[in-house]
Amino acid sequence: MVRPFDIEEIFPEAAAGPPPGRRRPGSSAQGLAVTLIADYTVRTRAWLPSGAIVALLGEFGVTAGAARTSISRLVRQGVLEGSRQGRYSSYRLTEGAAADLSNGGTAIAAIGVDPGPWDGSWTVVVFSMPEQESTRRRALREHLRWNGYAPLYDGVWISPDPPSPDGRAELAAVALGSVTMFRARHLELEAEVDRDPVQAWDLAAIAKEYETFIDRWGPLAPRVAAGAVTGAAAVRARTEVMDVYRRFPVLDPMLPDVLMPPGWPRGRARDLFAQVYDGLLRPAQDHVRAVSARVANGPCPGIRAHTVADMAAGVRRDADRPRPAASSAPAVAAGIDD
Image (tube, rainbow, N blue to C red; front, side, top):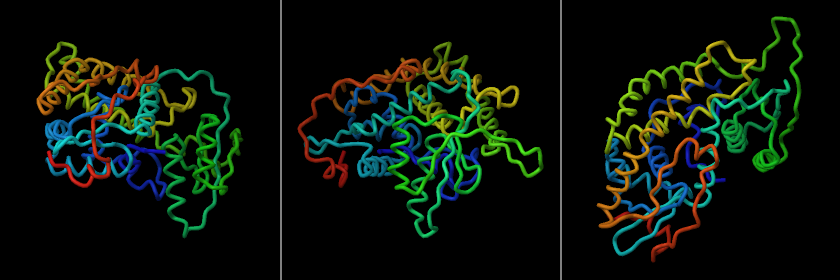
């Protein structure tokens, strides 16, 4: 499975299994590149000139060298594929990355949507691996993090959601037989030693993340509604609001309302995200098209932004566009000349 983002951007000590809620501030140039490219091409897998990607990242303060290094790494990781015409190269999302990002968009759009009644059961994943198998342990923990689980104890991870057939198959592939999964109810011991499953998540820290998001983006919403944010500023704001908000499906376990403290800020954050993200769609899309056309000396077909509603419905990707005459992607990754 292609993972366009690094789990350690959300949980810096993911391999050690700390309580959820702590996040590394800011985002890497690589993370910004993925968010930026996905926001305008995930539904079409359109080709973008590398010079346009570098120029757009430059508007975030990313140096040209760092931008080109990020592109090369994304190619090596299977997130982007490249094409070269003469000394100019273009890139687009791979099939696997586009599928993963499209699924991630559905999860992002589902934040704050009522999932329906909860049956009171938890999905419990229990595993045991020798300490020397650190690579396998890390891969399993990362998989569980991405899928909304948290460690109640070391080797005991839980989620309120029942696993899908695909989820069970993916877990089996990662764990390689060293794991047990079951659905169970919590029985209270009425003693100080009893630990509520909800304590697997640091709800206070997660609420603080939401409040920080609201404080950061709330003042911008009226200006967006008034059409006062345009050009490069629109792209920066739209990319940054997504780059922060995309972490919440992993940070927030989407526990049933009955388990949440009063005044939980998830709904307010979701409404604000939709106002900013959708409100900036037109000016940001126009700017990305303009920068790409300037670099390519002509229009770049397929650059098309999407709304939160589009993500909720599943961002539909058009049939693959014809691939420009090119050398192989590895050759492009070896040297980006434009």
